[in-house]
Length: 137
Image 1 (cartoon, rainbow, N blue to C red):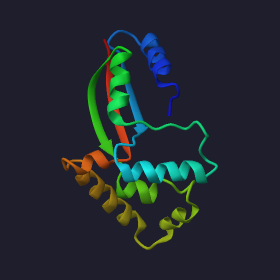
Image 2 (image 1 turned 90 degrees about the vertical axis):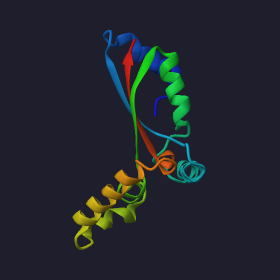
Image 3 (image 1 turned 120 degrees about the vertical axis):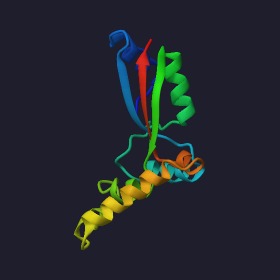
Image 4 (image 1 turned 120 degrees about the horizontal axis):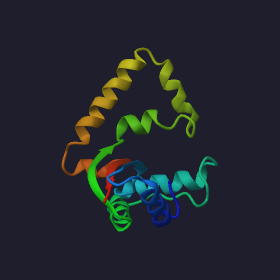
């Protein structure tokens, strides 16, 4: 959740060796519904700073390129499993999922569903997170 993104990426670029890689995992607001839920969470819960920022993935990619990086790979992640299992510190009731019988298998099943969703052409753009691997050029 780097802010300001431009200065931060330029500093990362400066300290990396030539051909060095930066790997980012950032929340992304590409899908309207995700954006609205996240905005609500940021206002409602104390866990987030008032200047907390998420990005549209295309804007983050442009910022990386502007800072002198070449995009090596992007990967989308975070649908159902991430939503139900990824926020127990923010939504306390989610921590009780671990006490459901066969919780481990439920979690693994949800992760498998997320992996399938991340490969579907339109659905993948609805992910909550984007991983980006970029190389210093």
